[in-house]
Length: 146
Image (cartoon, rainbow, N blue to C red; front, side, top):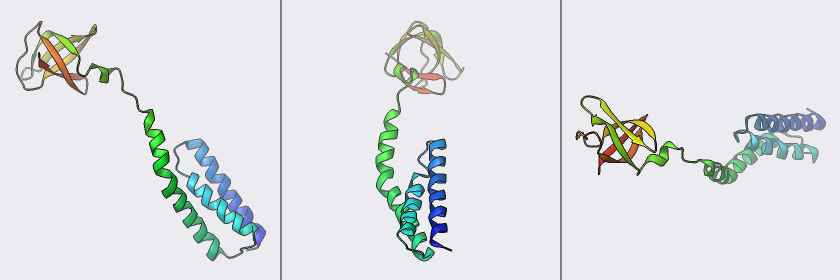
């Protein structure tokens, strides 16, 4: 293939990978766009051999992935925020329906909201007792009597 054709092929791949990246916003093809751009630069500089351009594409793409992926993951994962339900953990609630794991009953009131509840250790907790929320499993609070 001629030198000019390979420049346009690598340019097309660079644009394609960049467009996919912009559409998905998942950091899945940005490294391939970098590798394609590097191979395009080789073609512009007169390196006509695909035996050189393709390995450069692979090596540059892999290097970009290895170098930047840990940094990118670090910044993306910072956006995780606890939900309102997570804020219930460690709080005190009042039993409104006796908590009995064997019967599958139990409700507690926490900050004005009624939740289904189960006892951490299987002990029946009577109506009106104060309990501490240990964790959330599905839509049920796992509690222990205070």
